[in-house]
Image 1 (tube, rainbow, N blue to C red):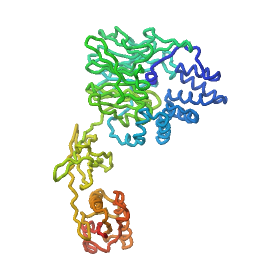
Image 2 (cartoon, rainbow, N blue to C red):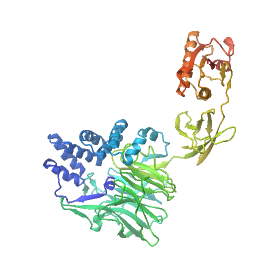
Image 3 (cartoon, rainbow, N blue to C red):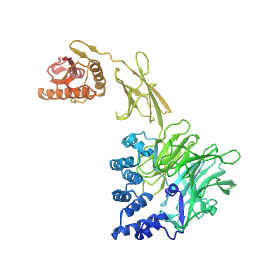
Length: 622
């Protein structure tokens, strides 16, 4: 149902429409009236009767796309793209593939889209970062998302919490006439009680504002006395007649209402509405000075964009302004919500890099930053939109069709800590730019890796009350780890001071700290990697040097087993050095087993002595 507020126009009483041909006339009429449920049935009849052609396949695909039936849309886009070369068809096909979790197939269609529309910002973003999904999956979880008991078996979306009242749009009124797009009743605005325990009760329609047309979503002023909401221009008896189609088209308008006592009244259409385009999904800043909304008005970047308009002290309005390309794309941007701080904007986009369908993004409008995807579980492969958050109650709401229907979900923030790592030279205190900095969780899983900026800084957001470790490394310095103390936030600083590499190089040997291995294992440990990085640096500084690595075991196990184990350790050591850019012909390895113990303790070795015997040594061959 939210697609109504993306398409942003409605049609009624359509008697005839121009058709592709006589066979598609009936289906085309339904399609152009947005009655997609019945349109799909008519197009499928043509397929069953052997009268389908590429046009029918494309219409079927777009029909299911508009209903967000991704499985059927993929099926018909596959056939449509056999002959249809339109860039947007490839893009829609990719979106539906992503909605089914088929990211590799989606990338193939995005490649075709990028070739067909190379100047499109969506194509440019894809070419710059085609494999962005793993990065999105690695994002720190910011919110918990749970089903809300306010949802019904019909479309419910656009929930926003003010004080102890929750407002939302819903098609749950079964007594009303159904709308052909979704075969559901027309939308109404509802209000429910938000209780202290987080439960939501007593949902009832706002009869003062609702009409026989679509109404909602709504936004309320801080004092609770002014509302802005979306409805149809039919409310103003305004429509456009398409003579060729013999149809009347409505636009979505924005309206203002004023509360007197317990009643809403004085309903007026905003002056920047227009019968040639739509305005919808309003969100009022808490200071009451700016109204954000979505619109397909002229000068939009894409289908629908996010706009804002100033509300002057005398109640007049400024000129609507487009929020620009940091927010808007050639796709659809809609459902803006301006946070209580008057600078953080949440919005939904189908044009930015996401998981599929609509994803929710946030942007700080005060500092020129880029919009960021909120990640999972806020976003999924389906449509996720209408994110709102009440700062005082630390409670938010999200709309999504992830379960097959537009439903409202409750959102609660996960306590987070902003960790700032500053990398410096341990001896001089100098800032180390471009150092590699990774952050690991308490299970030693690498969460993310970034390069330090010109100030030696890297910032990560992690969960509260959880231990993390930072790994920092840079050529010429010993890599090291640094603990991130458990914290409730909001921020923590880690001083990552790296020691310059100071290696003892004799005529016959490079002496490092011991490269110890875990018992009965041959993998390189993190501590071992830090030491081997020193060897790599020496070999880079002396490009003619050739090294042989000798690997040793303790005396537990048979001679044959220990010789094989030490050989595996030697090979692991060599492979690590080669992986760091050293030519394979400059490093060789040999397993010595237990033949040359560092501590000759026989059968009475302590654990510490066994550990000393499990080592690698580095001899200068040339």
